Image 1: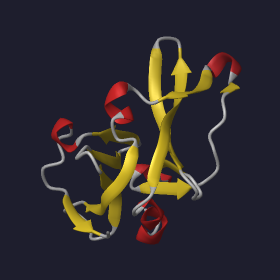
Image 2: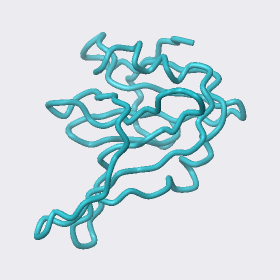
Image 3: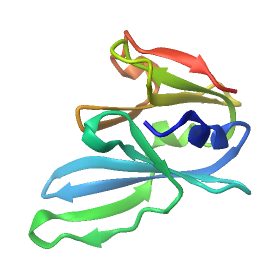
Length: 144
């Protein structure tokens, strides 16, 4: 995963909007990244890390494009569950798997108490409230 200091940009930040980048092939949709648009700070684009484990964090906005016979990449506003996480990021944690102490994801709680976990495992980017994910062995370390 990218170093925790990349995620520290989220500490105390106001998330103005969240969008998702998806690969669409026929009726299949695969989440590629989420984009957190931060107020008065550089935004965060979070995607699965190399090798399908952990995360890669950058600030470049995703873009839509056609992949011809392989489908297309679409950008859309976050669904209503993820959209509830818009607002002030009150607490941020790194997420650790039982196999390795290296952070492989993160979690944030906004000022209204909505928690979201972002975690990549086996080339699948997981983004959801913690009670909707089966990550029983994951531990969290608060960074702010």
